[in-house]
Image (tube, rainbow, N blue to C red; front, side, top):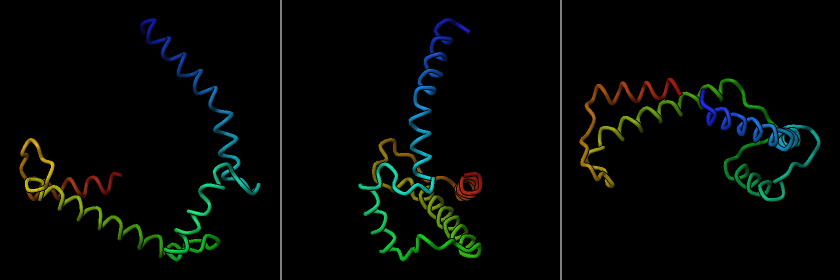
Length: 118
């Protein structure tokens, strides 16, 4: 490796070492049982509003059946959305190069592959 590469590596290690105590204490406050964490004053009201609107009880755990159905529904929506996006690519706005639609088989293969691998 060149001197420049070693210098870049040393700077990266120094930055990570400098950020570790700050990030570690923040994560300990967020995930610990110590009460309030930094950012709660700003984000807690927003979080409570989203919970209220969506009907989520933050003190109740999610059952495995609910999680499984949510996962399957999200995966189905992802496959259908990506498939449609690729099939209608030629007629969508903001297509400056005029790329046409992806063929059916390739669209389906790509959509399923992206959904199952990510």
